[in-house]
Image (cartoon, rainbow, N blue to C red; front, side):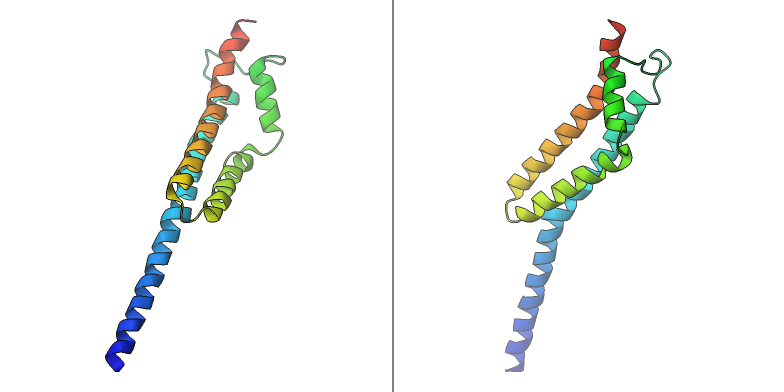
Length: 131
């Protein structure tokens, strides 16, 4: 009788560990990956808007890059461009637990959006030089 109770407790414990591992894989890893990629893209954004290369001076008023950088800089970029994507991925991953492909797709979409944002901040300078 005691042996059955021990084996039952072990199976419950292993299910609990499996549930924690699933939670880690399905929610925590996509959030950490998004946060990591958001910081990299934010550094690229900061480089494009504020710490520009000497060949491209600071964005001059009226240029497409200046307008884009001013609109994003109106809020706190470190919070908006890192915290918001991470929270969005966390909520969507929590809602879609049990669907790893859907979570991976949502995380990939967020990474693409962050990359596009960083690319815009760096590529609009070429449009400004042709004005």
